[in-house]
Length: 245
Image (cartoon, rainbow, N blue to C red; front, side, top):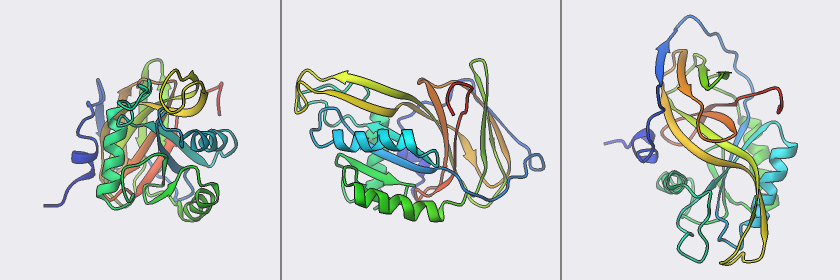
């Protein structure tokens, strides 16, 4: 039986609260074009090899508006001297799913997954830059993503296109500085950007234009990813607001 991305990769996640979905086959007419390239760093504050990778992602978040960089703090380092305050079991499960899909060779940190298809060591800048350039050249969107906020409510519009995938709603914090008191990074103050604080399944996109309604997720900022079962990114977008572009 074919294993579905939605069923295994995100089984540990709760559904979006107060969500509803409506299909409007004739409402949205998206154009194929560039979307932000998804950059996922699997990291931990307890890992001494991770700060250079965290710094690279922070630089990308600051200087590359064509990317959607996100840091996923895994849980499997928490028993080795430092409890990462941003660790999520959902992050660990997401990385394990990439291993199951043979996108990543193993569970490790710092691991960078580019556009759900290619794994590089997150602190290896030349390898990361080469992977980002390759992904940017290929990053056509199958479905346009638009997010609109009204108070504590979100409307997520996914355009029509070819494909099938899960619509993931993520909340993330833009930046944190954390003094580390124990473990491999003891005595260091770590600066990290675009830290994922929540991830939920908002719905399923099956090629038709789709409108979803959800509450604001935990986190300062919002991103939406449409992802196929094999990890391919079909669409991606972030919520824009007046204070941050």
